[in-house]
Image 1 (cartoon, helix red, strand yellow):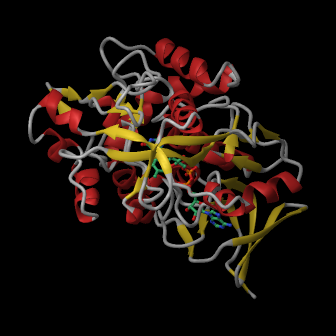
Image 2 (cartoon, rainbow, N blue to C red):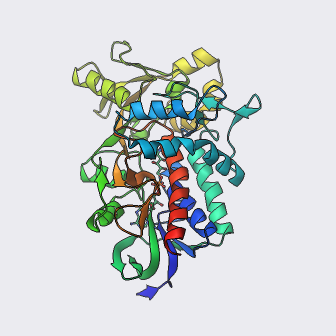
Length: 400
Ligand SMILES: Cc1cc2nc3c(=O)[nH]c(=O)nc-3n(C[C@H](O)[C@H](O)[C@H](O)COP(=O)(O)OP(=O)(O)OC[C@H]3O[C@@H](n4cnc5c(N)ncnc54)[C@H](O)[C@@H]3O)c2cc1C
């Protein structure tokens, strides 16, 4: 087994949280390495289509962002952690824009969209590929900083030592003074364990969360899982693909088998998901040719509201994916059902992203407490940037 040489800070994972943490640790003067299961940036972060929330609108405030997120999370969020998240929003957007994320603009400012559970238009987007653009910009910055990389090898063990941790990867070990856990919520792995479909990347497995718990890190609301309300159930080639929340922001409506609307489409995610499941359980859903049951998402309403060509322009990615599968979403409704998406809870951290284990710091979807028991759409990408940065800075301080 080879040894990659010691470092001050080892970051496990290279989604938004891992790459933001690595940049902050390196900026804090720590020799930094990123260990990641496959290619740098291969992650759930890169899959995020919807966008990132931050109170940057002229009619908005961090207080309103806080109130929306706290209510959507059923009052279960840690108030201090949530406050830090929303207060860090505008600066996180400025940091991403500086790194080259091309946020969509209109009327001289950012283009903002109101999404489920939000009182204000607060969602920023880089086209419909916000996560991919974030990954592209962060990957470029990580490489430009010459941060050491261990790509293509999963971490299989984390063992405390007198000076920090010895981390075992497939084929090597790394000694580090502090470790940032940024390995995501692992919902693909949870879905496979339970025979369910999920929206998650194949690398989204929960073993790092479990290793941290075995070392003594506390878990908060770890079994609070979020389902994305509008997972596609047909055509079969798109089963499990989540139509972004923005389809409903732009006017798509939900209908039962008789065409009746049954839920407020702009309600928080868990309310919409529960509404769909209720319809299906009461036998008022629609059955797809593959036997799956769901409801109609009327995407044709979008162009009726905004004019022909709007869907093709603003939802080009979704439109094209469905076209390739033989469905024109501007002419036909689509069948949807909630699909496993996100771990609301996770490792308990303090305001500096420290877990209960000295030297183990955590950020991103692997953590819990920030969102409570239901996350507002767009707040997870924000979480990766705000807490990724905090975690990296803390890790650099811890190793001094
Ligand atoms: C389809 C989809 C759409 C989404 N859309 C949005 C959206 O529009 N807005 C929003 O705010 N949120 C969205 N989310 C949620 C959001 O993308 C994620 O919660 C967030 O990006 C998680 O970031 P992260 O850095 O914590 O983890 P991830 O991005 O999941 O990265 C985890 C990293 O850890 C690595 N890893 C895992 N295990 C190991 C191991 N054992 N050893 C080494 N490395 C390991 C992985 O390879 C990966 O690089 C979406 C999620 C999905 C799946």
